[in-house]
Length: 450
Length: 59
Image 1: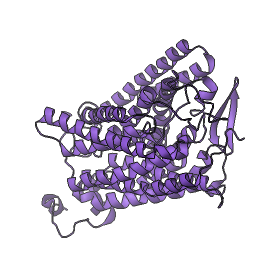
Image 2: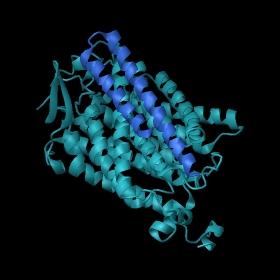
Image 3: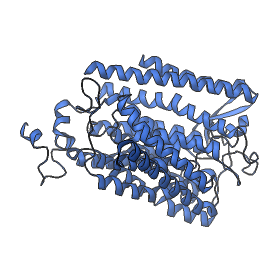
Image 4: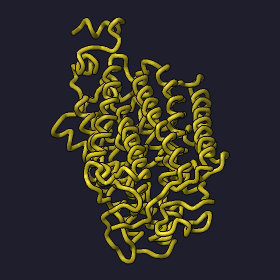
């Protein structure tokens, strides 16, 4: 049944959307460099190849299966009626994206942006499984993410699903709102990263018998820091295109989105630099880089709905959250997350959607208010934060068990972790048969023992 | 402990959904949504602890 009006774009919106969407691969390139740089040198080729495989699998599975479950506003969907409220659970599109017609620019743009977005989400767990996650398992896990987990939650948020309809059905503001994907891309990816880190366990040598973590620094901080710059470019496109397509933001707001995105990242990295300087005596480059991306993630949900000072506040909190949670996870919860994806994408994504509920202002109508986009609640509606909290509860209470269950089941049939010998050799040698840097003899002791 | 934790995560989510469906007034609905979140936090603590123990068991 059709539940919401279709979303038509002006020619200017289409042009800006195309431009912004084509920037999104830079975000993927950024994440790939960050993940690879934070891993060991003996797993570089594996990490880069796995990243390409993730993007490829995510694109194919999403087009074949995922989009059929996600759909878009105004498209066919399955719904149940509970009381007087219609609960839209899942889309009812044909497989292989056959519902996307040549003449419909909006749906084509949505599909393109989603292909990139699901690839981005798939790259997040890769950072948490660095140096011990087998290539075949990475591909299979990504297929689950792109075919089931991501489309389901993205439908609820971006395609007129029940979370988006909380405003119409239960008077909770505009319903759950997320312009740039703090929840549907990053929190979903971050929670999957947590599930992967749990299932794989820590890298060998990470923890002593007494449970004390050993520092395993990233092998190339130039990759990491350059990746941060590429990520900014991609995020500018992702947030702008997402805001236009999924919340009906006017194109005149795009400069504000770019300003807020940049400010959130800037304040987050500075917060991380200052905090690590105060705590450790010198700024920590990898944690600061994580802070930068955490600011981008935290600012994504609210970027069209806040003023620049609030973007700075969101970024400062995101930067602080990343620095403390990375240490907390590693030291106290014994979760080995080399890429920091759980803190950066999971925690900051959740912070981003909560911050929208607290700080968001809606001077222009939000698309997902159902039958009439102009019939939204008054500015600063009290229920908005509760809608955001319900979305967070869904992420933790449904998405995390779902993604853990899928990956746990996969692990029962196809062990996801590399063998002890393979891990000692390095993922490059054990899985690909050759290292990324064959001209440099590194880790002499390990190679001579083979 | 791990599966009990995940069961609590799901139970907390169901509590949140139930609060939306069954309660109309804003205050009780908010209270029950927050109660659902509290149950989820409890589940999350159990799941984290279960993985902590299994790691120590391997060492």
